[in-house]
Length: 271
Image 1 (spheres, rainbow, N blue to C red):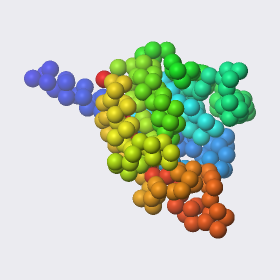
Image 2: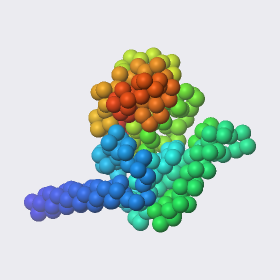
Image 3: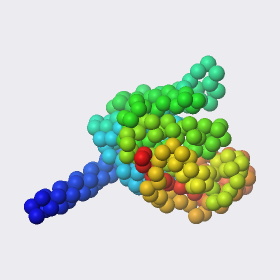
Image 4: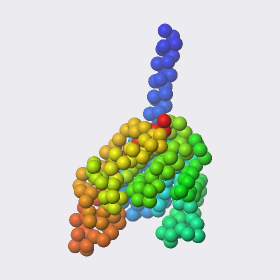
């Protein structure tokens, strides 16, 4: 009887600790989101990207080892770096720069490094990892609690590297580690060629790629859904914010009103 009661108390204490940890992390995310290090342009996208809700859905805690895949201009770095700075570890995994690298990747790498250097008190503990997409290694094997990727899957699918990337995520994660995926969402049944051309991928495709790498889907969220996005734009997802690529001047305001793309938010666990 006493053993049963002790077990109940232990379960209750674990649950209470998890609640406190989530509240603590939520407060840290709030502080990071409103920090002076963030640009006004990036803050303006919070309404579309819901960083606090997204990161808490994935289960982020401030003492985790987290890998973000291809952080781009550092939109999520502005939030993850300060949250993880004191108690956790943050790997920013970017493409390996070689003599054959295209100018775009060179510029992105240089700009990202400049961003980190501009605020060492915020970004000084960020560790950049350069990976070869032909054999990607994002962190020491089995060291990460969480791998995060935001709006990237369509690029890997186009380059035929999606399976390799997902296997790399699995290698970096501890058993039971979390893979969080946010991606532009195509309508079910969209042909693969159309997915790649438009930048919108189906949930089925992402779940299949994750499953092949040994992941199990444990939850979905609609926090980044946008029912106003028809997903059938002439120039694909790039017609929408933040790019507005190729949109005629007369249609700019109408397209702005749509906001950013409709997105899936999927949480996987390494089996």
